[in-house]
Image (cartoon, rainbow, N blue to C red; front, side, top):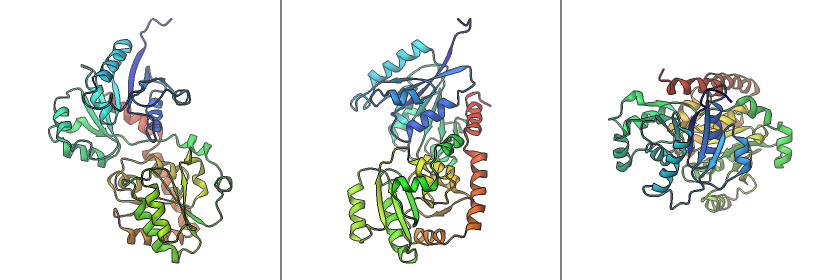
Length: 366
């Protein structure tokens, strides 16, 4: 038995729904080689052995109900306090506001609250609560999200509102990807030019604008198809829109595809039409596949696409139409040059090694 006491940190997540399971894996990996062991706690979601076995950490499932996560969350806050009494966490990394709120109930322990989308602190009640949190540092997953937080919380010292990009194990992701031919075979894709969109079928993702733009562009892209991977509340509405334009043969809904990143090399271009993003994991996975990217100019996309991808104003179907046509007609030389730019961008900003180093700089105050 070691004479040294084991040191722990808490990674507190609202749930393990995508993309937050990936986020939990990211942050747990930052402790590799550290003297501190991470304990990952999921507030919501049933206990899952597959989830637990994938994470490089001890995993605890609180299995909270919707009722328990509303209001003051007294019961859950007590459970977090009991865990702290057991493990004596040195610090907490809390993802999303609900987790941040519960983590800051612990006294005299540093809390790093990670914000994944803009608008987190536009509610007056949240701004009032944060004003009294002296143990809290807020982390935006992009500079744009950081700046949005600073704008909402002008009373908070700027050095306590920082940014830390999302990251991926790009080599591991690439090792798990299927070849172009195998991916197309498994998804029953033809050899037509294929655009892919990945995300919840939700107003934030604005697949409606993407569908409108593709329909406008289709006459000049006779061999192109659009595939949309994901499920969500707008599924029937979006399918009805496709039906109304008689584009069922050109626009296909793949549904929720497990480990969708594995199939990305089977496509020719990744398109993200979102109204709101933090720093999309799906976009980073598209970079791992070295796909050309077309993305909206929403806050969380701007830094990720700068100098390596085509962008368009939010909701601008006409401009998106033009970009789809341009990418459809791109030559092989420009595509090779683009791949080099993507890999440079990834290496400088989004790898685990780069982001892990920046994470510990934040924690250590350097």
